[in-house]
Image (cartoon, rainbow, N blue to C red):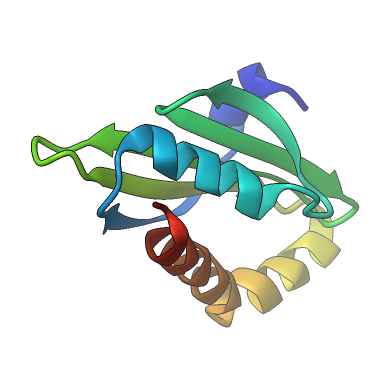
Length: 120
């Protein structure tokens, strides 16, 4: 999967937070946090604006897209958008376990909180 295929994935959810740091600092912190994460590879990398990761396995093809918007006060509005396809019966079960239980939302909110806490 590459960046051109991300928009075709169904929208799953979006979570957002405001980080008291500029967009470049937030972008670098996102990269540091995701560096070495298993199952993801960088599909889009626009410093200070967007960082998108994609991945797949037998039950899902997915993208996690971070959008960064600087606020007038020099802070950053950070949004984490998830898109994914869950093919077949096994994909349906997997979606129920990951999305339906709220586990995915919990993990994404934790990631946003970590960036908010660690961005200089």
